[in-house]
Image (cartoon, rainbow, N blue to C red; front, top):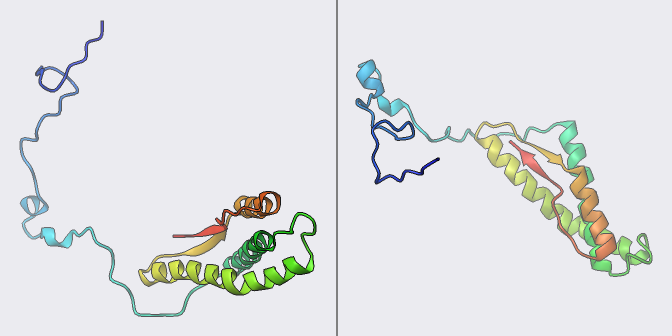
Length: 154
């Protein structure tokens, strides 16, 4: 039968016991000319400010997500979306959402991109089509909103 052994029940032959290392080596012990200070866990220092590097795919994804998230907010804000999803009230709220929520969304995602690129990393926004459809569908059917249009991938 299988028996559980706890840490206070020492058994020198147990395979699962962790034995301490006899010798701890450092890089300078192996090669004296090496210095352990060159091994750091930090990141590269930020590079000087430069232009934001974008691609046409990223611009397309940002535009689609901007329009979809603004339309979802317009449906929620109008309150009458179920009866007429393209009515005058929804269109007015859509324009308002494009200028407020949409611009905030763009600035938020571009801020992620700028910080990543400043630390010499590749970063591009990618929309999530399923989450965009879910957001618009939920706004239309239930009048609720979950805004997760995509993410900046690093």
